[in-house]
Image 1 (tube, one colour):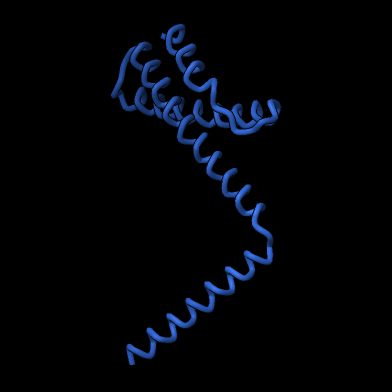
Image 2 (cartoon, helix red, strand yellow):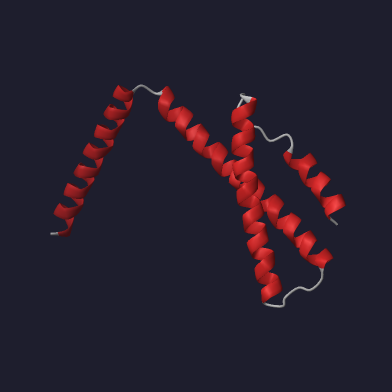
Length: 119
């Protein structure tokens, strides 16, 4: 099964790119791949340990499916984190300060009015 499923996994995940720099991309994709591998390995091992599955072929298929799902989820979590970091660094700090102060003022007024209404 590995002969069939591994190339299929690589075809699906081969076009996932987080960085324009190839070295950074390989490093992060290696980390994402290791996380996906460890999660799939642990999950399939648990299935074998609890006698839910038997046989190498079934375990291999489940391993590659779980690995693909975890890879995609972790990839998009990393992508979201990078997007948030880029967004935060794009906006000048003074605008963040003004926004934070405005939110704090609105929350303070809301709490004050709420407490007044409860009395």
